[in-house]
Length: 98
Length: 99
Image 1 (cartoon, rainbow over the protein chains, first blue to last red):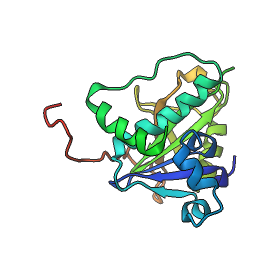
Image 2 (cartoon, rainbow over the protein chains, first blue to last red):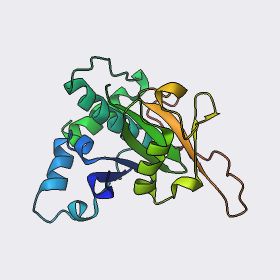
Image 3 (cartoon, each protein chain N blue to C red):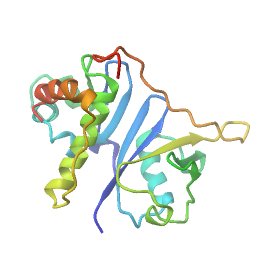
């Protein structure tokens, strides 16, 4: 395991989530940020700030990335979503193309 | 055996770590050393659901650490004592103040 193979996502409140690059690539928006040759500084530092995504939503999104990897490798379990975060989560998912 | 992931938390940071259920805690700590720069011997891992301190030599499965489990990381202070569990929670206004 190498640090370069991970990405740090930072929420609106400044909380940090360190996840595998492979998990981050579940999101098309993150994939573009992390792989494009354009001027995204995110690619260089492996750090992405989300001033508009709250901590609990960003954590849920990260859990979803990992769930998604497990699901695509054949593990069929449900992904639980608490009703009170549904709207916020949908907005974040829309932004992240997830 | 199927890969699982765990969430290791301290202060404002969460490390999502892919693991095999038959991996030992020591192996997990080695990964956390890479990610957090805290040396293995300064780390103590505690399963948050039960507050059980995890044993280096035993595996995740043996100690009932399951997929998506939350684990607290505490560090050894310069006095040699272990710090208390310190996991910060964000406070914010919710869209649904009553929930």
